[in-house]
Image 1 (cartoon, helix red, strand yellow):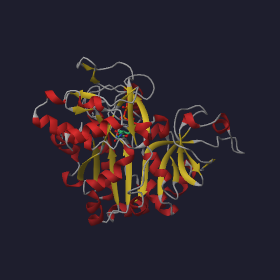
Image 2: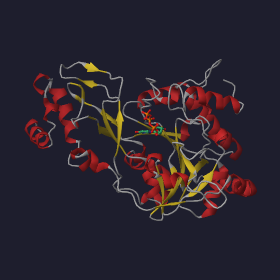
Image 3: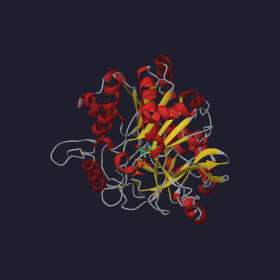
Length: 408
Ligand code: UTP
């Protein structure tokens, strides 16, 4: 793209300020900036009009889960099926670690956060420890694919290498980077954070499978013969990965996917709920639920929309292939975004000052024909580290780790 082409393109979309510093840049910097501009895709409706990104939702209906009691009755059978699938090299794990963890306010990849009090215990270490419990029992490795972002890739790789992958086999660890989207201010103008650098942030956790494709990992999946991928978030320190009982139950159910869920403590708890939308599995966010949906009860008195998701899903690889090339909705997140101000100084805001565009893994659930909701005990499997203090924080997650016998 030439300067003239960039100017015409940006002017057509009201973003010509991105060329403000162009005359002062070195030829290499100019080229760098033009390259970023050529990758912007500003013609998408979300960049024209933020409201256009709001999704039209269909008709919601409750979806039941296999409950803790039902799972306990068949746990041995499910475990046997799941362990066999792992031994047959049918199961891979995908760690979503490309987020920015802005609420935690930690300047490194979230997995590097030290949960220990008297010793070092990093989040990555907690997760790999949980995965190793399964692979030791199965006596077979589960390939672990780690999604990083442009910003945290090098640091994540170096950290895991330095710690010898916390005892996992390096040959079974694969990294891939997710894509980026530009961030905009409250008026829809794209931010710069250096004269030749557009603010590009990770594009959300929904694009993991297409990013794996771009990184060439689908070939690896095919070569190994993986049939299931267990996708999970970095920030739940009690996350059970490649759980054989979950794998076995999902395989036995014949569903195309499975999602671990926890029973909501009360109707107003702020979690997304696994349900049906136009007869397909879907997740309705707490703020999208009407009062009637929130309080609707089954005959036995339990909440009808009861099962909250914890970002731990199983997807069948052949069903995922059908999602490639699909248009994921772009969600808008109000965030704190460092940027150059009018005077050309770098500003680090204390409050959200702009918007990022993200695809979400929950939209991938809606692309599946079926999903087994699999209930787990939240006190054993759900300790999210989202905030520095308060709800879902380092403190609450530490307490849950200790409750589960982990020495900190
Ligand atoms: P969150 O939605 O909590 O986002 O991620 P975040 O970026 O980590 O944190 P905040 O909102 O800025 O505080 C849920 C999971 O999805 C991953 C995160 O790493 C986490 O495992 N994620 C999120 C990605 O891999 N990429 C993204 O672009 C966003």
